[in-house]
Image (cartoon, rainbow, N blue to C red):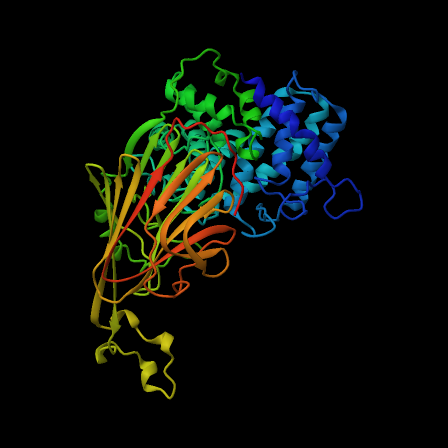
Amino acid sequence: MYNRVFEVNDDWVREGMDRQIMERAHRWYGGVRTLENGLPSPNHNSGTPTAMAIWAAALCNPASEYYRNHELARRIALAARYMLAAQHSDGTISPGWTNFHSPPDTAFVVVGYAQTAQLLMADGWEDLKETAADMLLFLERTLPALITGGCHTPNHRWVICAALGFLNELFDSHDALKRAEEWLAEGMDATADGEWTERSNGIYNVVSDVMLIHAARLLKRPELLVPVRANLKMMSYLVHPDGEIVTEYSGRQDYGQSFDMSGYFLPCLMMASVDRGDPVFQGMAEQSLSLLKHPGGAPTNAAVRLLLDPGLKRQGAETTPMPEHYRVVLNGNFPRERYLSGFAGAGHHGVIRYSRMHTDFGAPVARIREGNTSVTVSTEMSSFFSIRHGAARLLGVQFASYFDPGFVKMSRMATLEQGYRLSGVQEKGYNGPVPDVDLPASTKADISPWYLLPHHRRPQTHVQRHKVGVDVLETVDGWKLVISSTEPEEVVSQISLIFPSFGYLSGGELAPAGVDAQFWMEGSIRYEMDGDWMEISGGEFHHTAAGVREAVYPLGFRTLLLNVVTPFEKEIHIKLSPAEQARTEGSGTS
């Protein structure tokens, strides 16, 4: 089974070689061009270290066609020299498009580079010794930056901890261990159900999981695996029928993008090994492996890790398949309001430099899977409902209003007998004059800049509250959404339904409403793809606004707009094609 990892790795060897700069006079001689911009980069994900990890796994694998290939050995040596040239004098690297002189990006490289160097050293082939020495020099130079450097995002802390663990393993650095403990002293940022701060199922879950697995071993802190276990088990409920990951509520750049489970192969396999063949993790690893098309970035190259740790290859291990029928609420018992109540007392006044607060951490998400049908009900996101029924997809349902212009996020979720009740409340008022006792000296001068006034001292006046409720109800033949808002009156509002651009949309009375958007005024519509369909009723046209300020609808998709004005109660019925319906016809696009 694990031969697939090495076969996939070999498939990418030549591709990286084709992108390497081989002109001696070139300023980036030996670097590997990225696909993003055609420039070489020392970045861990698509840059030179990723190609080096792929090449090292091939060079050190006796079953590879590139095993001890002299030309490839020359190529990796040139890449290592490029990396030394790309390293700044302070030991950091700059990816080339952001985060210049970046300790966290350097840490990502260190985690991958250390494993690659260990693999080359363990192999012992004479042609690789100089490359290994150059890689060790690069790694040693990173120590000052990682012992003193900071980060941007929550997951960066765990990347730095893993990197410090590898640096201590290689160079016996007490300062590296001390710095890792300083980061770990901040505590783990995961709910009991396993959701990390960034709620990023497509990207940063894997980052946090893999890095903490390494850190637990290298720093001798097995308790770091507790949130990793929870997160991986949570992920078994966050996969659509086609193997695509649920990204409908992500807090990072994977939001709404397409990712499959292949990235989870390595952390699931590593945890299966740590937990002595846990069948859930083993089953997830094997299902993820079946989707593997790339061995991974430099820190997560599965071929490198398997060569370093052959014990991961557990042939014939017991497996538990991922569930296909369930109804779960993730973070349903998380005391989110208790944590948020401490926000004001934290002392940061809602400001964090170079990052954001992620106050949506721990917001409840409901997941329903019935074979070929996959439903996500979300809070704290612009979209509160999405459904996939075979090939037919309703990517999101949103509610926007002019009360506090933009999308209204549902903040609470309660479980009903046949579904879920969501609610959101917006509050908006006006600011009175700053009390005399709080006025700064600048107000007595000839000029009093607005930005020097203590705005947080202004008393609020005429505060209004806008309440929105949504019942998401399962019916005999599909789902029903009941969206309502009663106060304040005459709030111009808009419900939007987002569909993929592919597929066939028919029925209903539609009218143009801008680029890729249409008013849905009345009647029933039908969205069909590859024989699967949804019939949806509930059009409305109470006003003629084509959009709500601050509510931006995605281009390249198909957005239907229902225009409503408070008070209202709007029912949207979604009828699904029978599960056993034969798929005899493909669908075009209208």
